[in-house]
Amino acid sequence: MIDTLLRLLAPHPCLSCGEIGPILCSDCKYNITRDFRTVCIVCDLRCPRGICGVHRSPCDAIWYVGLRKDALQRLVGTYKFNGTKSAARELADLLHMCLPALPKDTIITCVPTHPRRIRERGYDHMAHLARLFAGRRKLPYIPLLSRTRYFVQHNSTRSERLKQVRGAYTVIHPLSADSTYLLLDDVYTTGATV
Image (cartoon, rainbow, N blue to C red; front, side, top):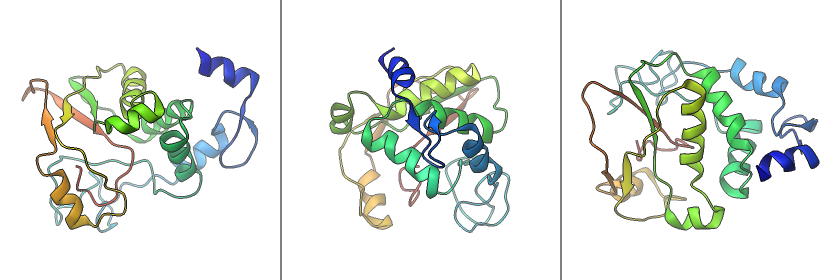
């Protein structure tokens, strides 16, 4: 409610063009989704699943809204580091526009945020985004993972990140072989978390 009131009383300048209104105006949002490509996240070859047959992944498919640059980088950054909760709505819209239709049995979940970051922000930014996206798609959101260890990935190499995440998460909700799971994360850097 406070966020809605602030949007009315003190609207944001668009993070891309500077126009006063939503944090990302519809024209600039379209510019991001217009460039959406279905390519392998490793080699950049055209691939509708986001991971080509040459590269291994524990996922059946990987989708991403875009490269972390320009307006998208500013949108993620202001949401993740500045506590601008209204950016979540724009990110949920971008996910909705870029992801294909999902099976009706899909459960939306997310990578759990470090508790220190939750305390700093006052909320779990990924759980908030996952709930918004799940609501947009009329699918359930269930927190399926919990952290068992805490670490800082920032400025770590891929091999360091792979060691950090080994055993760092545990499943806290029973999984079903009959369901499809969509795991949301804010940034894909090395793929270690996935």
